[in-house]
Length: 202
Image (cartoon, rainbow, N blue to C red; front, side, top):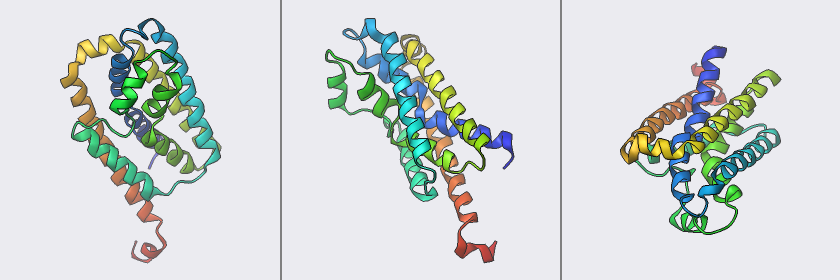
């Protein structure tokens, strides 16, 4: 895989697992009313916290098996494709807690909404597959770009909701699920290429 296509694949993987549109829609719903005046601060602090958490995970874990990661991606892909909330979402109980007074930048915004299981698995997997320090820096830079897009989406959450509506958000989720399923298949094939028991057959 060439460098440009590898960077594009990594970017799409991170963007789909983070899900800026889905995040913005949920962000808009849980910050209505009591958190409305704090939206800018909540969006900024939650993305910074998510970036910090993801960077720590990336630097502390150098390898992640392709099979668990691919399974995680498949679960999220199936959920998104069939209009589910995905792995990086919040339950109804968490939503009710978020609508109460208090600081929600860490929970549930940073985790599990922005830095959920799927997004963290993607970041650690891509970092583990980096062949050089430059490719590792590229992954961290792509994470920063995706989180920047997420921040912008949260700041414009109301406009996005009006523009897309529930149907538009569902369509974005379904397309993201299809892309993620394709990436999961690619990860499995990449892993099989390096499987010791298959090397004599390749």
